[in-house]
Amino acid sequence: MKIVIAPDSYKGALRAEAVAQTIAQAWRAIKPADEIITLPLSDGGEGMAGALAAARNGSFVTIDATDALNRPVKASAVMIGNTAILESAEANGIEKLTRQELDPLAATTFGVGTMIDHLLSADCTDLIIGIGGSATVDGGAGMLQALGAKFIDRYGKILPAGIGGGALRHIAQVDLGNLNEKLSRCKIRVACDVTNPLTGPLGSAAVFGPQKGATKEMVASLDENLAHWATLFHDDGTHPGDGAAGGLGFALRKILGANLVSGAELVLEYSNFDAAVADADLVITGEGCSDEQTAYGKLCSVVAAHAAKYGVPTILVSGALKGDCTALEKLFHGCFSISRGPATLDEAIAKTGENLRHMGTNLARLFSI
Image (cartoon, rainbow, N blue to C red):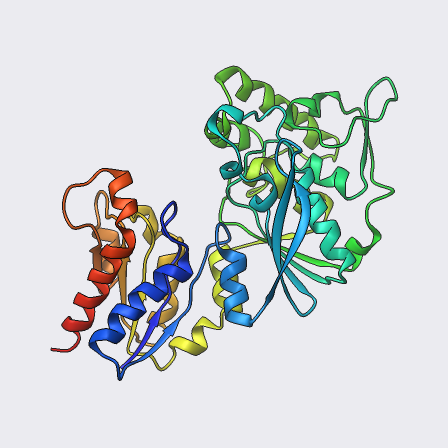
């Protein structure tokens, strides 16, 4: 048999590469003659750069950047020829802050811009950015500052570098004359499956602000600030996807001319997934938790759809299955949770590797019948 193991990460537990290798090792112990291809994947968030580096033999580079609170941080990106892949959360990620440090009024994407500027200096002409997991709601203003933009208040003073979402209301004039000139020669694609607009009840502040520490009052203020930010660029703030990563999607699309694309589709393309699965006998995919939403455009469903084009069955192996699984059962040939009995979330996370090995062993035994 030829088996393709192509999971997403089990967020909070294991990266996609570790998930794939754990299942593969368990399978090989039972069926050593089988051909196994491991393709760790991502939908554009955590693990995207690593997945593409593994698929295309990319090299990691370390960049001196800043986190969402403008503190020094070592960020990594991947180079594949003249193509650079970065995860913005390497700079403005929410996981880099404690719960007490969350401050969407001050949090900035300046470090993201620093990363882009560095990659442009390394002669990057094709830039792929995953923008999940942010702590910011600054509309991408900080990123633009790091790339050379200047923001001027109504008194004619230039606002300090690294502004957050709370300062957007003070911008009266935008000067983009000093933006890095290499941007005009760089193709930018944003891996993002979020369709929320920049502003309004489904906008960045309203939907994602609370998880980044925004109170009800902050949400209202940030939404007003983002609406003002949009008007500076003659935009109404309603374009789908612009609300991603606290409005970073807006700045990338509107100001830098980026294309927002399906993160899952982009990663499958760069991983040569179709070529690997075309003559396979089975695909195994999975994620930390699967529910009805998994069937509607999330990575695992995209994996199953691509495999189905070649008549290859796909099995879903996830940390947990929740709610009504009818839609999942129509899409996958089998849906399994690796959980082995009642456990707290912390206990389940701690046993992820052990439970994955157990599941991989049992699946291999099943296909030995």
